[in-house]
Length: 255
Image 1 (tube, rainbow, N blue to C red):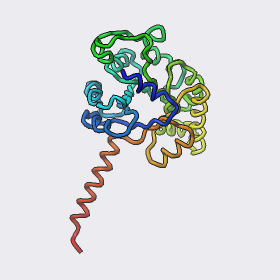
Image 2: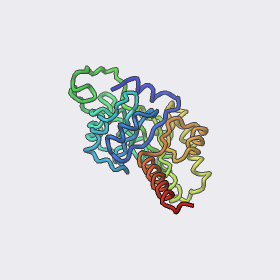
Image 3: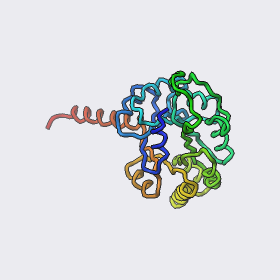
Image 4: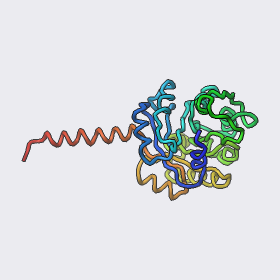
């Protein structure tokens, strides 16, 4: 695993990424040719299956790009396998408590910090050609903050050793706030500010997914430094829309 990439991602500077939801290695390979610091391979809501993970990792040609895999749930054996294959980190959805954050850290890390099993022949160690060092940096952990419960426990979650990024899922957070009768814009912004404060207080990184250029600017102004913008599916939809519109316009009667 590229230690420089891990160090760069743990810095407090702006780090931009995007969502990879389609699961096609050629699209992942194409994305690595652009100026992204990290890519998120989505196994929760994306169309990528577990069998697609390794081929997408192999498609990453730029060693400076961090590949984060969002798992659907806390499954220690699957998390360990993804990391053995070479992922730089794990994103876990719905981290509502410090206990859940600690459980994920245990699944990701070797003893004494965790319970992950070790194999020197794993891809992350070049199939046995690289010798494991106990000083090697731990994988990145993106803990998703997506509910009012998570906001209520955000300081405790941030205090967990091994949590790197408090990453807000804005759609789920808005939905949960709405369900709890706190759907006002002010309540959402207040929750975001609380995440940023907790991250700064505990030396962690505040992160979020942005849907528009305006969101990117607004979240950056609020203090978020790890921001994902859009997804491969969004890029494809917008590109197909433009292409179809050009052809529709060309088919109109000539003046």
